[in-house]
Image (cartoon, rainbow, N blue to C red; front, side, top):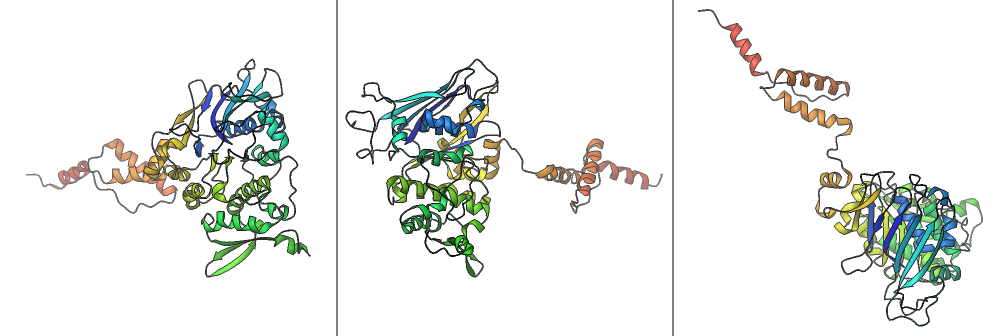
Length: 445
């Protein structure tokens, strides 16, 4: 399941918001990264996509509906409209409820959700387009009710820690299991799929390929996941899911839940995607063949800047057929993206959030240019000390500085000294001071 178009109206600060993650040929674009300041509805956009993809029944179970409407316009209707489509590769085996005959190419599904003014429930429907295609009652609701495969969507919020072994239960409703984390409901299964799948060995091998062989996890050299057998003590339980890390000249096998949050947050959602795809398919699926829509809030969460730089290029190689729509606050993520893959969220003159195209391709820019163009930061001097030092260095070297500039120089010197900064340079004398010294030393004729 891939997103083609999104239109949102009356949801928080989204009054007339549009997003079209498509390439020049109109096909689904595999990567879209949303950036913008806090409070500009990045998470709400991901959640709106998730609601539209899950159908109105499950959307009401996922969302806190009373919190969604634009409080500035109590008489306005909230509406979410999304168009989805599918891959050609699996078209021949995918079920399309409500269609009498299989169309020659994957159809487009339009999903619509609304909340009437003063109401606290989402109503909606989905249908195939164009209208000439034979229509069923509500294909998305039918698919979610029947748990049909190959309509995959998953979402992950900012709480992405690994569960303890044997603490995961297979969800009765897979679509809620895959999207609850994006709404801060429930928890990821992650590596817990090793306890739920019939044979955890193929799951472990695929996870090793995604995380270790791709070098997505620095210093990680192996993964060891054991199923439900062989637990005799509490220590055995903790040791069931382990990762081997290179520490100096040694290699240590550590329980997954002992790893740092940076490791855990990455392992958790990637393991969850692999496990969810395996569970849906009823068996192993190669990484390069996994398809569907993945929504991630703050994809850079807990990651060191060096990890962030390689994150998206690696994910593009590992999951070439998954469509990712993610948010970030990090400039270090952007160099792995082309111009059209970056969407900048900004408020218009009335405070409504709008989407703007990226002005440049981040991969071709310096770090300073990325900060300036995408984050509105013209200089990176912490607490302005760098700017003060730069200005002080200019003034002390200028013999023609004026009285006001001289006074500014001494104020800067005092500020730097209070901050514990010693420039190590003495001011050159001004021309005026040198002239006064020369005049005073001359003998009268």
